[in-house]
Amino acid sequence: EVQLLESGGGLVQPGGSLRLSCAASRFTFGSYAMSWVRQAPGKGLEWVSTISGNGGATYYVDSVKGRFTISRDNSKDMLYLQMNSLGADDTAVYYCAVCYSDYVYDYWGQGTLVTVSS
Amino acid sequence: DIQMTQSPSSLSASVGDRVTISCRASRGISNYLAWYQQKPGKVPKLLIYAASTLQSGVPSRFSGSGSGTDFTLTINSLQPEDVATYYCQKHNSPVGTFGGGTKVEIK
Figure (cartoon, rainbow over the protein chains, first blue to last red):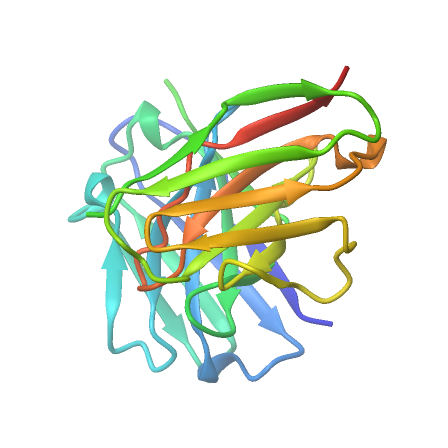
């Protein structure tokens, strides 16, 4: 079965940076778009970013444009999210998800918690 | 950008009841609508995509309908294990906006 394992979360000060990673296995990683979805404590799901299978196209929610960068290394089956200029509103569990078709999130990782606080 | 609005935000129903959750898109999205279930403390799980296609392994008491801007998730005969928050998501583009969620509880 598909496996997605996020890492890189933790406590960071406001204005700081963090890079999240998502290790994928048991599917042909480079063939599918991947996304990051976040969930603030006690809140709903928020789509953050999507990257195409070959990495040539990226998309972001307005609130992270210019601060976050999604990327992937298809030779390593890895997805990344570089997060800069973090603020309290970025505190959330960040999930990576694979889009098998039509941008449906068929499988999700377990999530990694990012806490932005001084 | 297309916005997704769910209603109600929460509901309480008895075991065996029929439950309906609505999702409205601010512009037409054809049938590109998915539903996810998130149980407390768990990862979201895909239930339905393309508005009405049940994901493999999902109980048949779940069903989806709608097209364009208005969609419905129906749970026929609510079970205790269906206690969860349900989210709709548009999947017509790489911008995968979610609805605000509907929390379902047992009365």
